[in-house]
Length: 273
Image 1 (tube, one colour):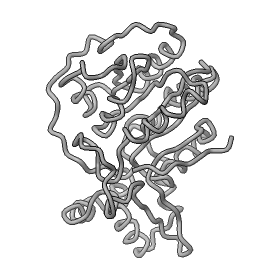
Image 2 (cartoon, helix red, strand yellow):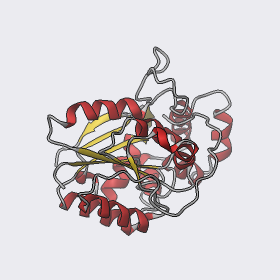
Image 3 (cartoon, rainbow, N blue to C red):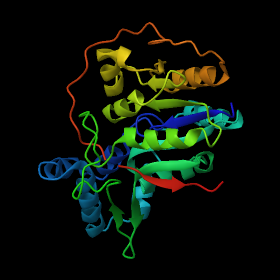
């Protein structure tokens, strides 16, 4: 539908893993990363461990080869291509980093389906070392969100507010937002009754929504795996219904998990198709 904007989280939504964990686990850096987290925030620790991998002789091509093996279901590929073919605009809002996302999307031929990627900036320097930075420089100022579910370097709610301000000028009428993590809770609160929220069932954002689902204005349509994501998303795209539905399946809500923060704030990448 031409008036529909679909916003995807990336880790555990488009790919069925956390891209940061996928890399350092496969490079034998899990214990070292846990040590870094004792003194550094997540985003800074990722930059640090990528530097250490570089010093060990691990190249960016080695890292990309690992990323290309990250699990991405054919149902997700189909959902993205079908939504695009139906006239929807697709964007990503994710607390990962740009190089990791671009690598995976390019490998699967999906990068050009997205008009914008909001994530933590990263690049390969002249020495071939991957540098990763926070989208929001939390060392100089706060992003201002007091909800408690957003990490210091990224508030996805701020990104959604910016997107919503530009929507009417762009002819967009509704947002369908898909996510799984606690960082996806804040943007869900920014959605209107015309929008749809698609939380991944039994993941942190689902737990937070279930703890008080009535604070959301958006319709809630949950999903558990890639096949269900594709089915629910395409049904919503093709539906003209504006009636509010709270928790669209028979799944049972359970208590919210304790809220902690570790995820990193996105930089915008405008993708030229």
